[in-house]
Length: 299
Image 1 (cartoon, rainbow, N blue to C red):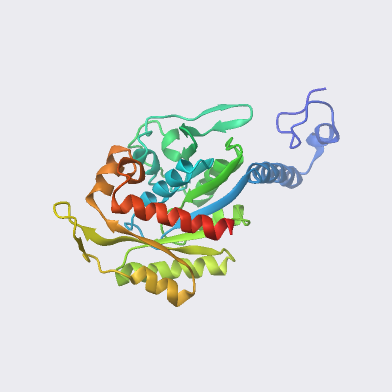
Image 2: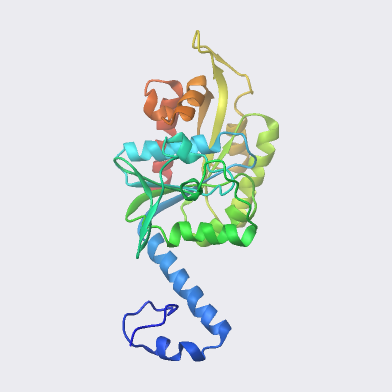
């Protein structure tokens, strides 16, 4: 006897779940299906050594740029790395890696992430859209279901690091991901030096602490402007605010990335600065931040 299509045990022969499935109370059936989904998520997550969240209290601080360069930096070190673009409404990671026209495939075991040779795997809502400019008009529960599938239904395989690029703020998505991966190594908070950005960064730090999520550290992005003509640094958006906030909250300061026009150009062209210009100040800053993260996480 073959199992019912909704058998929560996914067996291939007659079992008590199949023979009793039709008589189950609907709530009990839902509970069993939920448990099967949770078990699948746990099995996928257990194959990932280190899971880190990249967060920001507000938009516009370059969080996705930081997340993408960090993931590339880790993969360049020979680490098997994944980046999960968890921003359902504004998925930007594929654009920054020049893979926005790719589409994920699937088999009976789930979805396959997009490969960026030699050591990076990418998952994003952008790979599932019919057209690039199609908006995602979803309410919370549907978004949460999609994010759960990004973990439970994706063949991540064995990873050294999974970098999760979270949408800005402290709403549904960061909360749900943190609850799905309670064993995560921690959060990286991205901010810019201005006080208005630091106010929101402090909220992200408190958000993480209230969830019992370790704060790996703070990255100060757009820290000083590098003149494209003379190479001189100008404190266009101030400087040192991220380091001050890290000291205030007793969390590590991971480093500062200058506001370099090359970072913008490289991101738009699909070649992150850490790859495009290894000798730039920004690339060297990301190298340092990757090293600092690994020292903290791998201890």
